[in-house]
Image: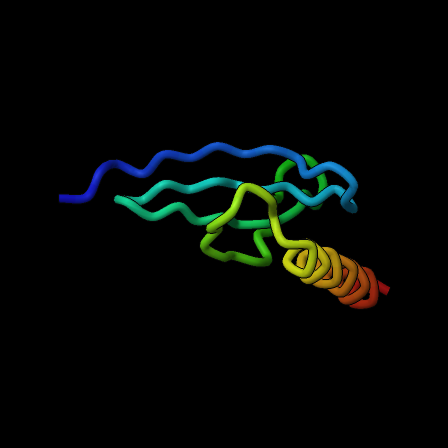
Length: 79
């Protein structure tokens, strides 16, 4: 039987305002990285199953690259 989903979140240090949500589902722990677009919109842009204490640097770089791409496309659309 699956346990209820539990969630925590924190801002990752030394990143371009990337946040990490920790999701526990059953016996599995997942991480979702994302960022804020203004005060009311959260953009979740990368998910993975974390197996160590430290978030892999390449995973953070992927989230930061996707964030830059998101804002570049968003502002280009509004021109």
